Length: 226
Image (tube, rainbow, N blue to C red):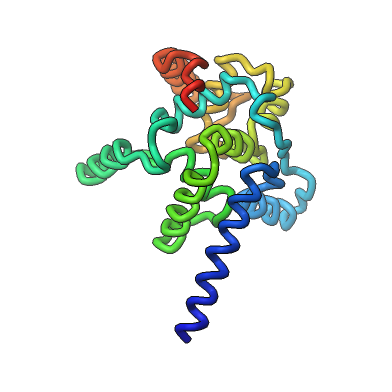
């Protein structure tokens, strides 16, 4: 029994290492979350509804890269996958019974969306931390951000900033303005509830907040830290 366990553990480690190393250079053909959505859509008869178009980092507007960091992970260049400052804030809010957003970093979100399944459990969280460590050790920061920009969900069955830009603004991601990029980033907390093309008062308010954060970070020169 022990021998079987260690063999399975060794196989998992080798497989996860192979996947992470390969995807450092190979464009991601999709993600685990995309696969789950595609299965549901196919089951519902929406076979060709999923939008996804891999786009290299150099072909994405720097405003888009800055906007998602301003919205989701402002300490991204400095942490090693876990932002302990935001984690402490989240724990403090929980203790006070106050509402709080998750403290997941961009790296954690890439690990979760690329390799794992939806839902919450200690097993999934443990695997998320494992893949987060691998990504931070084996990928440069810019690659992590590039994959995030390509697999993040910006709307129903719409994954990646290129597909979102074409769907909501009828232009390629290379030509997104700062305002449009902030609008896309504003829906990230719940892309199934909020719409970039039909923004609610909350989305517009969050867009303005993200634009202020982008300016306070120093504009696109902030990306030079990656």
